[in-house]
Length: 425
Image 1: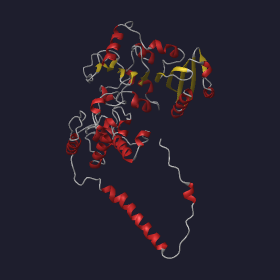
Image 2 (image 1 turned 30 degrees about the horizontal axis):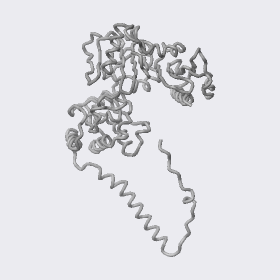
Image 3 (image 1 turned 30 degrees about the vertical axis):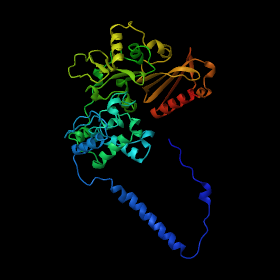
Image 4 (image 1 turned 45 degrees about the vertical axis):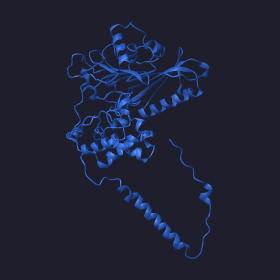
């Protein structure tokens, strides 16, 4: 957050001597002029940004293509405008937005519009170059539209647009023509009548893919961050929406709900994911693989594999021969042996050096209407353990420091952040 401006107390308390004569009239006149100017600025001035001519979305897109294309930039590979377009990311009210979206009024307005009207921005290309390199949030995958610059298909906000005038400019220009979005055939009906829920009782994860340990065993050595999500365990709990949003690929990825997902990072531009749909989907002809430059998506294995080509090839090799190469499981095994990761709805491991630890673990599990949080740290220097962690009554298991607590989701999330902050001191 940016620091607030300080008030000059000396100026604030300084007394202005009263003057006689017609100065009061002059002061009143000046005040009136200032008020009128402010009114014009706030009302009449803002009206100048509104378009004077009604246009179709296709016409607006053509206008943006010409304006930004003439500047020499290459646009994203955005499909042509459709009359009856059903958005990938459904519109929703813009609640609390991330700090980077509040950089300035125009940026905030653009982020709110991207949240509330993705049906518009998903059909408008971006010309900032993200069609080639994507962003960190998109894991380097090329953006498909200007909406990707603000929020991903899975609903994760991207800071990319917060420092890009082109992204904000295109979104703002589009919004000026469609301030309330565009009608989408079938959208209101689908919102009013929720899609039938998947009967999770008929779905289950395979024996080789039920926990974060299973994911690590299928991942080559070198992972610095990995997480596992069990959607079935989350279903019906208060954790479901907050965790699924941004952590699990959307249903539209395969046209099926992902029941278990594992994601592993080797670096910011090298990662892979494992997806399971809860049934043996290898012969399901309705599932289509994603075809993208430098990426692979194997849908004939269980779990399914997605990510950068070399990583996907290595995972496929490990599935066929578990002894073909070293895996990341051996790295995190001492940490996992000290905790109950098998029943976690969400579990994360992270290589991070602090004064007393070199890697840590976190999990969230629903229990009795509450959420159990487990934090664990692999100890490298017991003498350097921060005193601030003592308030959590940690338990030491071998070379692992374990903290457990149970409370509502918001509380445990806040405490988890605080524990991490203390651990880094």
